[in-house]
Amino acid sequence: MKMILTKAPALEPVSIARIKAGLDTCTPRDDTLLSCLVTAARVVLEARTGLVFLPQTWTLHYDGPWDDAGLALPITPVRKLLSATLHGAAGASVTVKRGRIRLAANGTGQRLVFDDVGLKEAGLMEAGRRAAVLEVDVAAGLADRPSDLPAALRQAVADLAVHWFTSRQTVAFGDQAVAVPEAIARSVAPFATHTLH
Image 1 (cartoon, rainbow, N blue to C red):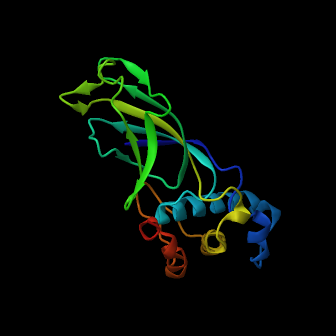
Image 2: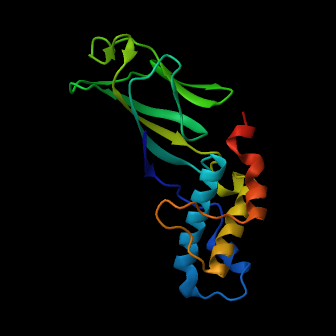
Image 3: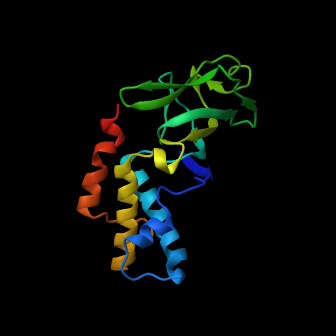
């Protein structure tokens, strides 16, 4: 499974002006750092909650084979399926037509489900199981605008960015987990996707 962000949110959950209003010492030279910290805080809290806060588009690559239960989506909420293409091992590809692939939801989250029409003919079926790489473009996002995002999530992004700015600690290196202060972690816990289904 590979995920590629193809379009980032146009705006962040909180403005630099809001962050600066909560800081005692801050100069215009700090704006670039604060902007990076706000983006990093959003990304970390999105990962922690399993939610995509604001509109963004992703390309998802699934390696087959897979079965009739469909494929779990690694991000939520997905608002729209933009396109889907199946690439077979022998080089055959087929664009999955609208209506033959759909978003579905169950108790564990959103899934992609599609029928087998045309897949056998395209050489993308093996022994009754789908054997291909599925490339899917999706649009996701919990809220259309920062002001539509729950206030607790906006505040958590602001608090985490301020925490990193004032503590000036290393945020992360390589594949190390990013530490989130306990109070901030508690404030976003109710939004974790396992509690939303």
